Amino acid sequence: SERSFVMIKPDGVSRQLVGKIISRFEERGYKLVAVKSLTPSEALAKEHYSDLSARPFYPGLVKYITSGTPVVAMVWEGKDVIKQGRRIVGATNPQDADPGSVRGQYAVSVGRNLIHASDAFDSATKEIGLWFAPEELSDYEPIAWPWVMADN
Ligand code: GTP
Ligand code: MG
Image 1 (cartoon, protein in one colour):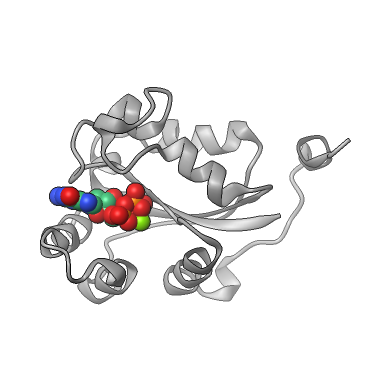
Image 2 (image 1 turned 120 degrees about the vertical axis):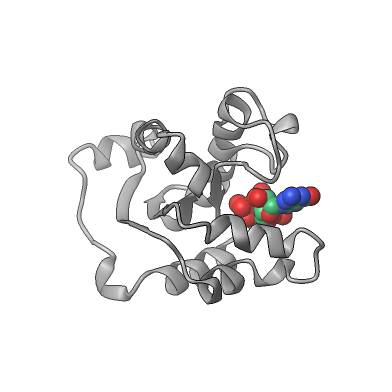
């Protein structure tokens, strides 16, 4: 199994969608490895989105993430959780997102799209290391784990 970094953005917290969003990952059977609420520093937000630093929306994106309303940063673990987490989240532009996804159900604007999820193994590794110290990541086995993870 693998781990993904998932973050509920300030609009998700302000709109009080934290429980509903967490439930989607929990109910799918993924394991919550770490969770915390914080207002990220500008340096952290810039580093998190450093791949997009040349894009015209980058300053606004950093401002949005560091608005002062906190984000909920999480690490989820499970089979194929990086790709499946992206499916739970939905397309970047909520107008293109499947209505069953978080963005497709709750968001209408690309600049306020509620949630982030890592897009690949390398970015997941980078992001988990950026947002969490190793001792903040828990190792345990959920009671349903053998049922969720069985392959046969
Ligand atoms: P994240 O999970 O947040 O990384 O989104 P993503 O992987 O679906 O998209 P991407 O990494 O390309 O863009 C990161 C974030 O930048 C998006 O989630 C949006 O919040 C924002 N963004 C991307 N494209 C646009 C755009 O055209 N306009 C605006 N205003 N914001 C954008
Ligand atoms: Mg991205």
